[in-house]
Amino acid sequence: MIPQPHAFGGRNGVHALNDGVYWCHHGGIVVVLSMNSGRYTTLDPLASMVWIRACEGDALDRIVEHVRSERLPTPDVAELEATISELIEAFCEKGLLRAMPATGGPPEPTTTLGQAAPRSTTASPRAKAPRVPSVIECCVLLACARIALRVLRLRKVLAYLWRTRREISCVLNERWLQALARNLAIAQAISPIHTACLEQSLTAWWCLNRAGAEAHLRLGAQPFPFNAHAWVEHRGTPVVDDPEHLREFRAFPPIDFARL
Image (cartoon, rainbow, N blue to C red; front, side, top):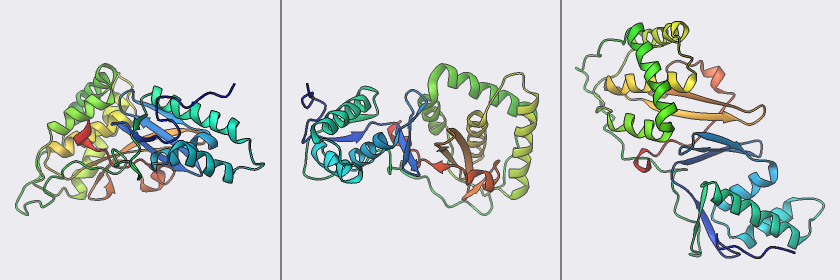
């Protein structure tokens, strides 16, 4: 029996991203990140196609029409509609999408493009850069980041760090950034607590924010083989990572901290 349209949207319902959900695609494969669970989900080609169309505001009938036109041999319409309905329902049950009333247009964008109200990006030319955190301080901060992620999860950690940031008041020079990267690398090597790129990036992001410098936390992924990565940029330049290494990853859209 072919399932009937569900209450999650039906044939004419549209969907929107839930707050705290980000996605990127590479080579037709979508990777979804939920800030609520801190988990990544890699979708297969069909699910990726359905996801992209759903996020663009297409209702079920339009998604079916699009997928049917892209797949060879042409699948049975009823069977395809049932499969796509199940996929969209699964996205909603996992908290990745939410049903929206049909309005005749795409849903209002949420965390894919949104940005929180920016801080002032004009730094005082007289502002003096603060002291670079020591290796011991970096060890403590890395451990705190690790524990916080285990206890609070990513979304709450990001919200807290965002609330404790300072207004931009200085521009850090290359020597300061290199010293921070060196101290972080040493701290990560000698710390008895295992930390990865996310803890390191959260620590670097917090250090730059507390210093009053412009800093952007970026998250990215590559689908095959799956690998996720986090890094920090200062004035468009990676702070710790090699830019060549970052070419392997497709970055998620900027984090909308106002919705965390």
